Image (cartoon, rainbow, N blue to C red; front, side, top):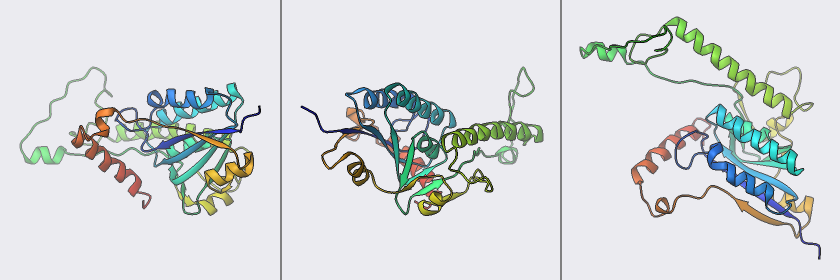
Length: 258
């Protein structure tokens, strides 16, 4: 008997980081994504994305894994943006063959940022002397406890520009033929979904379940995949760590007004 089509749903929600419990990273998501593509023969893999971004490397690794499996298994990938797909979150969305969002979803922020602090004046006022010894003149680059070095700043800007180029190349390749040639979309600016659609950053407005039912029929089944929290975490263990992580995540979302 012919079975009803199945859509594998992978939830990608949170900050993208190489470390931190509950964050999105390739090591944690690898078995989740592999299972979504490999269990049976899904009609499609749907990505539920709600992320303000984070690590460019982890974004790239996760996106590359999605594309590799989509090609190997010959399964289409469709992204559905919830509150936000910005920066690394948009990198993940661009790994899909199609991108859809809610009217009020925030999309974009195709840029790279590095933030730090300077505490050398505070140390000086307290009579504290910073002692650093290196082999290699650039080894202590951007030490927050020493005065800022213009050469270090220029070197950092060069690194950020290179990462930005990788981001732009990824978006340009994945959205080829859909982006306007007379508009710079790589400034770090964000847009709501309707405007993002006009600019070619997404393919339309729509929600996961009704769109998949329209495409695969009312009897389509959904199989959800996501990161499972450790057992102790579910019962409130490591409360302080969870609280700090929650504050950091809320801060990341807050920059987009969420």
